[in-house]
Image (cartoon, one colour):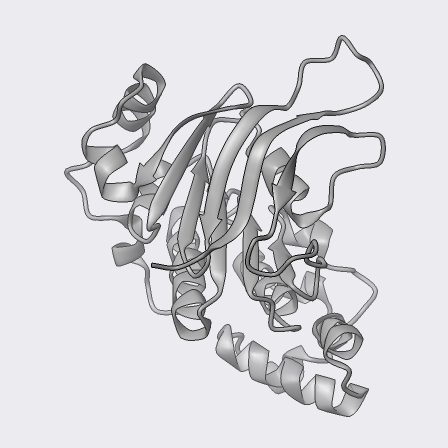
Length: 265
C-alpha cells in the first residue's frame, strides 16, 4: 500500500480580513496518496482551487488558515516549482508573454536542479518533444502568442515539470479548451504520471473528464468535502444527494470516458 504524501486535517481557509466573510474551505479532511491520480470535483465556488493553492503554499497574502497540511512522507512543506509542479487554468496568464518558451521552461530547471542554462535548454527541448509540440527546436525561440490554446497548455505542463517534481497539481487545466483538446491534455497528463510515478491532483468541474483516468475522486460543495472514494465506487453508488445530482447532470455513464476519445497528440 502506498504511503500518504499529503495529509489535510480540519483545513479551513478564509480570504481577507473580514471576519464575516464565509470560509472558502470548511473543515476539510483528505489524504493524498503517493503515486495516485486524485480528481477534485465540484462546481464553481466549491473550494477546489483554494484547496490546490493551500496545498502548494500559494494562497494570497492575508488568507486566514485553520487546521493544517502535513507531509508524512517528506517532513517539511514542499516548495512550489521544485517539489510541486502547478498547472494553472489559463496558460495565457501563466506564461510570460515577453520571454521565449525555452527561457520559461529552462528557468525552473536552472533554479531547482542546479544546472547551467545550456543544459537547461537541452532539457527544455526534451520536454517540448515529450509534450508533443511541433518543431520543438523552433518553439524554444518562439513566444506564447505564437501557439494555440492547447499548445500553450502543453507548454505550461512542460514548464511545470521542468524541475522533476514528485507532485503535480493541475487546476482546471482544460476549462478554456474545446472537448477534443481537453481529452488530449488529460491523456498527456495521464501518460506523464504513469511514466514518472508523480502524484497528480487534478481539479475539474467535469466528472466525465476525470472518470476515465482518476484513481479516486473527492467531491466538494460550498467549501465542504461531501464525498470521496475510488472513482468506480463513487460513480456507481454515490452516497450523498449532491454527488448523485452531480453525476446525473454531468456524466453520461452510457458513454465511454473522454480519455478514450482523444485524438492523436
